[in-house]
Length: 175
Image: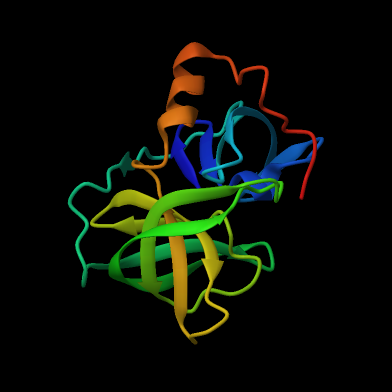
């Protein structure tokens, strides 16, 4: 999900362990570098050189139950729009991406036809990025979860501001 020229917000577990991160935008490939990474909140920013795009606002403050929007996911190398409806705000109790400790992620419960492999896709409501697809429900059909792109972004926002990931962040290993 591109959120600024050359900057993509995605799930950390999607890019963890990747030696080279490549985006294909309309037949043009660009290689990226991880510039922010939070294994607890499962969010990451990847910077790409020369990838122009419109800049959607990242803003989840006004999202309420019942709001509708769209998730942009990649299926078979094609960006696909999936309609979503916000069921409610939730705190997702889960493990970090390395399965080493429990964490609580602010997010959204969604009505959406999310499939395995859709992680990292943008959830947009009223033209704003509000979340990042995290998982689909194993219990309920057409139920999914997204990480709140604002309320879960403290560490990645700090990393982007300072230009440093920090000594405790290991982007080379994967779960």
